[in-house]
Each structure stands twice: as structure tokens, then as C-alpha cells.
Amino acid sequence: MCGIVGYIGTKKASPILLSGLSKLEYRGYDSAGISTIEKDFLSVMKDKGRVENLSKIRGIDKLEGTIGIAHTRWATHGKPSKENSHPHQDNSKTFSVVHNGIIENYNELREFLTKNGYTFYSQTDTEVIPNLIHYYYSQYKKDDMQNFLKAVRKACLDFKGSFAIEVISKLYPENMIVVRQDSPLVIGNCEDEKYLSSDIPAILPYTRDFYLLNDLEFVVLSKDKIEFYDKDLNKIEKEIKEIEWDAASSEKDGYDDYMLKEIYEQPAAIKNTIDSKISLDNKCEFNELNFTKKYLQSLNKIYIVACGTAMHAGLAGKNTLEKLCRIPTEADIASEFRYRDPIIDNKTLCIFISQSGETADTIAALKLSKEKGAKTLAITNVEGSSITREADFSIYTHAGPEIAVASTKAYTCQVVLMNCLAIYFAEILESSDDKLIKSLKSDILDLPKKIKKVLECDDEIKKFAKKMYREKDAFFIGRGVDETAAREGSLKLKEISYIHAESYAAGELKHGPIALIEKGVTVIGIMTDEELVKKTISNIQEVITRGAKTLIITNQKIDDKGFDKVIEIPKTNSFISPVLSIIPLQLLSYYISKYKGLDVDKPRNLAKSVTVE
Ligand code: AGP
Image (tube, rainbow, N blue to C red; front, side, top):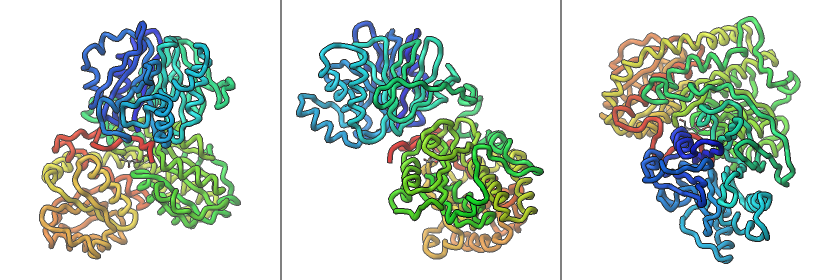
């Protein structure tokens, strides 16, 4: 979950590396460091804390090297400290390495290297990497670039786990070697400069031409050349990919925080996601898919597997898929799914939702489903991400880069795309009423306009946030699809405001949690389903009686029953109502976090893409 950057070219590397790191800080911000190749030595500067700290280290501005690697860390092995920060070097200081991922067998390797005379100075798994490279390299008789490459390969074949690695050496001041396995790494290409990064937005200011790497493809870079090798070091050719995102889409654009910008980008993000898929007069189109009626009829089950927010979108998707297609559908948490021996065969379709396309548990669940014979379909926001490379089929949310750790626009796009997919299936299967499909399509097409309307509640929500920000507990309740939005609202509040929040099916409250309701607790009720609204109102009455403050998000006309605040949102088909009901809750979490003076975009202990188990 760390971020890595690399540069090899004609300019001073350090400012480019620092700027890249600051864009990757959302991936981890416990410590940061850089290593550059100077005239006759490998410089390493690093410290705990954020990139800003690093940029203030004395002498960093004096670095002249035009080749360098850099890292921002989300601590896994060893606390945040200078010793545990990357880059790490081998004992002889010949190689510098940055690493994102986890070397699972590092204890064994550490023991082996210790027996062979190596000393370790950190508690990290990473420190075995440069030392093992050195171990293999020193077995060759002469200094030769091919031997450097062979040594990196040998070391990588010994590693179990995930890694994206950049290696530089004082012996080869013109080159860098990089490789990945189950951790992201992209290469940005310019004529006489090469940029490396854990993700695309960090290097978008320099290029839109990218190489995407597969597992265990080794790359030797010089400023004007890139050589690709497969696992056995046979030379291979790779195609360059032009990325559609532009640099501006990954800037704050006048907003105080990425999260607020991304909340406000939702109308456009949804429009981009549905464009070309949905129209009133034609069937739903997914050019990337070739599902036939026979295949869909053969399915005995659909699993939707994801983590966190993406899983909440999956729950909304399950609701539509089951209702429109009548195929039993389960939404499951990837970290549970992969270990619970799920019943899967070739009549199962497994759908994986992931904004980043790099979430370790989701990737593992996908691999497992493939092994068991299921067809796999990925829904991600990042083209070329690991999940898309593993899955049989991939479709995309076109939300643009999502930088804030708390997911907002990716969630609403995922809910919408899941609904489009359900319509696509239902139209092939002829399993649903035409009128229902047409009205759902029409409501989907209206979403961008309606989201703009919901965003007008910004001021009201800000005022409510002011009343609530000192509180310690909140409950989010709803029924049916509103319960799925309640889960997402609760997660948003927890992760960026650090207020303890729980979500419950409204009817469950009186089976235990109501014991916690008292003055000083806020209960947020979501009610968008005409059939269920009266029931949820009764549950809200029960908490008002016990002293709770209440906020209601609804598209129904409801009488004032002593609620502290009611936010009215436009009516829409209940399948897609989470897309509208979540927006006031995203804003609520945002403003509470601001009132508390917290770092909205980089909440404590979290990272944007969770590439460890
Ligand atoms: C969202 O606000 C969270 N930070 C988190 O739950 C996230 O949705 C989850 O880690 C899954 O990420 P992915 O969509 O990139 O797979």
C-alpha cells in the first residue's frame, strides 16, 4: 500500500521524485525517502513523517543525479521510523531499492542472508531485497549489466508475496531495473525520459503514454530506451497505451480537498460511465462482453465480491440483479469469500468490483474463482490494473482518477454500472417487464441532473455537521436498498471523521443496539422506498423517544415528527436511490472532518489501495 516513484532522464531527479511522492501520499504517509545516483555514490535521504518533511532534509536540494527512486510508506513490518523507511540498501551500499508490497518469506530469507554474513538494520521485510540481489550479484565474476539483471531475477524468484520494486546501482549509473508481482507499477514514456509510479495520476503531468507491466516482467531502463524481458529473461515487446485521463483531472482544481472535488464531480463521472451504454430506445450495450442468452440461462449463481465501499456498491447491484434477472446473487466481502470455500463451478459468474483494481483480497478472490471454473468479470476504474489483467472480462467506471482515500464518485459510478449490467442481462434473458426497464433507464439517464440538485443541500448539511462534530457515536439505518446506503454512509463517517458509526437494518435496532441510544447519539435514517418508509419512521420515533438527534434523508413527503433535520432528495427508482441518498452523507462526513480539523484526504491508518492482505 506504499507508493513508489522513479525517474531516469536528463533533468535533476529529486524535484520530480518529490512531486511524484506528494501525489502518491494517499497510498501511505508514515515515512518517505529517495535515492539518487550521484557522481560517485548512491545518495539516500529518508525520514519518518510525510513527504513535506523529506523535502526539508538538509542537502536534498543539492542532489544533482538524473536517476532516482522514491517511496512513501504505509507501515506493515516495523513501526514508522527512519531505519524502516525506504529506500533500503544492501550492506555494501551498491544497490538501492524501493518496494511496495510484502515479502511473505522474509524471515527465512533474512536467516539465510544472516548466515551468509549479512547484517540487518531495520525490521522491514524489504531489507532482504537489496541484500539478496547483492548476494546473487556477487557470485558473478565480472560487472556486467546482464549479471545485474540476472541477480534481480534470481532474487525475485525467491520472493513469496507481492512486490513492485525499483532497483538502482552505483555500478550502473545509466540504468534502473524494475519488476512487479501483484503490486502496481506503471512506466511513463517520453523520448529521453522515463517515469515510474505506482499509479498513473502521479506522472500524468509528464506523459500520457504508458507501459503496463504483467507479473514478473523485468524491465531495464535507460533514459532513452526500455527493454522488456519475461520471467526467463527472453526479450519481449510491449505495446504502449495512451491514457485518456489528463493531468488537470488529478489536480484539486480550486477545491480545498480532493474529496470535496470528487463529490462535486459525480454528475460528470456518472455521465461518462453511462454514456454509450444506456439509451431509452436501444438495448443496453456492453461491447466488452459477449454473454448469450444460453450462457446467462445456464448460471446457477452470481457472486459479487469486493471490499469496503466497492462491496457496498455490490450490495446495491445484487438487489437489482436478483430482481431483474431472477438469478440468485450474493454479495460478499473478498477477505471472507477467499477463505470460506465458496461453492463455485462453471455455472457461476463472479463479478469483482474495485476502484483501484489493485486490492489484494479482491485479486486473490478472483484467482480462486477462476481456479474453480467460474467466469470472472471485473468492474474497475483503472484500465490495465491488476484485476483487469486477471479477469476474463472487464468493464469500467469512467469516474476519472479518485485521489481522496474516502471513495465517493467511484461508489456512485459502481452502483450505476451494476444497474446497467443488470439491465443488459435482463434484456438478453427477457426476464423483466419492459416498462420497468424503460423507466429505470430513464431514471439512470436523469441521475446527473438529480445529483446536481442534491448537491444544493451542501449548506444545510454543513450546518448539521456543525451540530454533530463533537459527538462520539452515530447510527445509520435504512431498509432494503437504503440499508446498503446506510452501510456506506457509516463507513464514510468512520474513516474520515473518526466518529464511531454503525449501520443497521432499521428493523434490527430494537434487537439490541437500541440499548446504546441516548442523548448525544445521532441516528441517520435513509428512506427512499415508498413501501417501507412508514416502518423506518416508526424506528426513528423509537430513537427520538430515547434522546437521539436525528437526520432524515428521504425522497418521500413525510410529516414533521420531531426530526432534527430532513434533507429531501429527488425521487428515483429505488434500485439506484443510493446514488442520490449517499451524497448528503458524503458531505456530512466531509464537513465533520473539516470541523474537527482533520486531514480529509489522508485519514489516519488508511491508504487508498490496500495491496496487502
Ligand atoms: C473507501 O472509502 C475505502 N477507503 C475502502 O473501503 C475501499 O473502498 C476499499 O479498500 C476497496 O478499494 P478498491 O475499490 O480500490 O478495491
